[in-house]
Every structure is written in structure tokens, then in C-alpha cells.
Image (cartoon, rainbow, N blue to C red; front, side, top):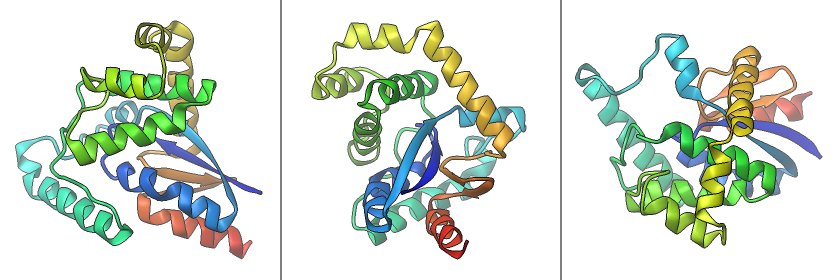
Length: 198
């Protein structure tokens, strides 16, 4: 089975589209998806690239929300926009994802988190949303948050980010197959086309 590395950050808006559809695409195309949380914020700050937040970028921001809304509709699900953005607890949301990937519940956590964010307006890794999500996953909140804030998880988070940067990843979502990098939700299909062409 062909494996694609799916590099993502909870906090990336367009990643909502991928998270909602990648399982179906993987099943259809007989792909194995390796979910890789990293800090796109750190990479973008290192590149002096701050997207959408300044008032001067309102036109671009308005386009982004409308584009996500349209594309979600094309895929058959909804996006209630604008969603809370940028995230106050960006790093914590992704550290929980890393812990979850290690323990086997990470994919479910990411999917639930994005659906609540873009369908109910509930910001990731904030209360009461995080308690509700962890309860839904039958996880102990205090233990989970303690482990997500551990030095081991923080170190893995930074390591993932460093690896992503060295691979040429600069945005989320990004799909990597061998040495080929495909950035953007709509590039998932391009990645698959490339694999089939080899």
C-alpha cells in the first residue's frame, strides 16, 4: 500500500477541507496516510510570513472564508465561516494531536476538533470544547493535558516541525510522497496523480 505523509497544523483553515475528506480518498485510492502534526506557525514566522491577520489583508481574508465555504459545499459538507481565527491555543491543540497519534486516538481527535471548529464555532484546545472532546474520546482530561504539555511531546512537536521544514514544507495541509511536496488541499489529487505516473 502506498504511503503519503500528511503534514498538518490544527490552526490552518484550509486543512479543515482535507481532514474531512482524506479518509474517503485514501480508501478509494488504496493509500496509507501518515498524519504528521507540526507547527506551521513557527515555520511561517521564521519565513516572516504572517497570513490574513492584519487589517490590510481583509480582502484576502474575506476571500479565504468564502473559498473554504464554497469548497466544502463542493465536497458535500458545510463550513460555517468565519470560524474563530487565529487560535489562542495553537500549540496545545497540536501537542494533543501528537500525543493522540502516539496513543492511537489522534486522527479521531483531529477530525472532531476540526468539525467542532468549522461547524459549531468552537475554538480548538479551549474550554469547554477541549473537555467535551476528550470526554467524547473517553480520555481523562487532566492526564491528557499533562501528557500533552510534557517535555517529550513538546520535543516531538519541535522535531516534527524541524523535519517538515527540511522537507520543504511551508504550509498546511501538505502531502509528501518520497521527495515530492504538494501544498494545499487541492493538491492531494495532484499527489495521487504523481504517484500513479511513476
